[in-house]
Length: 104
Image 1 (cartoon, helix red, strand yellow):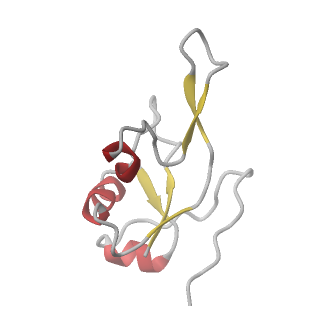
Image 2: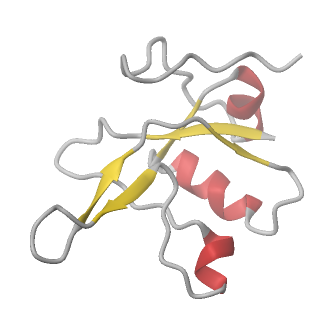
Image 3: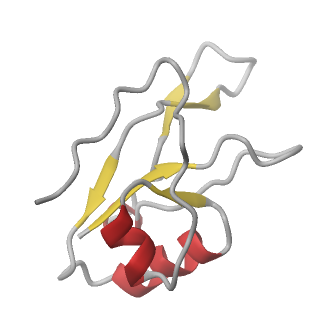
């Protein structure tokens, strides 16, 4: 399992990582973002700061690994960091985010 969070600290942009399962059925959805229709005339996407668990058998597992390696998603535990080849586990999370529980 990959335990991740959207990297909202990327300078000058907020990554938009597709929820590939929803995309395949025609729903526009992004990991760690929710649509807010009250933002401007067409709405906008805002960060949820949620912890996201991606199962090893997810058909898009390799795509999510690519997003971790590119810095769009943060690895939140040592097991996830190891699966992606080392990645950095953040020492602190945004204050509005509950700390993830370590996998045993």
